[in-house]
Length: 234
Ligand code: MN
Image (cartoon, rainbow, N blue to C red; front, side):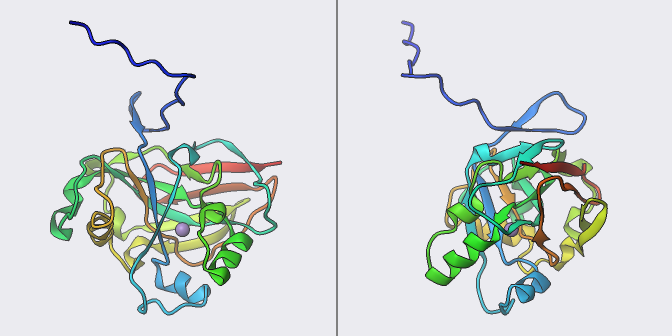
């Protein structure tokens, strides 16, 4: 007997997805997790002690993803809009309570992303102890490069990570400087959520975050991965 097709009261939203290098197929995005305060020098520039706290997790909606080449509108309700370049993990096989020693087997591939941030709103939220959603999880807040399969990505866990604004270097560091490593992030995150194929994890930004404005062109990368470029519109 045929099962009746599910009907919806309006068309479901399109599946958020990210391109894959040298492939016509796309990576379907399920959730976007982010790690805060994961490079010692960035933690210091934000006024915190790098060794004093466990990793901080927050999230962005899956439909906040934006592909390379886009014009991203300057967001509402901020006068201090910041870039944070980050290595992004693309999960291909889910799991809960994953051991750090087995964590890399859950990785499908990697990309480079920018955790766009309303820094003024984040500072207010930190002071008031309120959630970070309006500071971090707004529309178009997760631009990301085409993804590279892990087997083709080179040593991205110890690679140069960089970002330029209008050709001027603002961030340049090495992913080996993470406080919490990629396997430790996956292991810890999987104790709070059961990870699923399609999850993306932004792994935190190195030092050098700064403000961007309408008309700016941002380029960034992690050596061994496809770069990401986008510009800021009105
Ligand atoms: Mn970040």
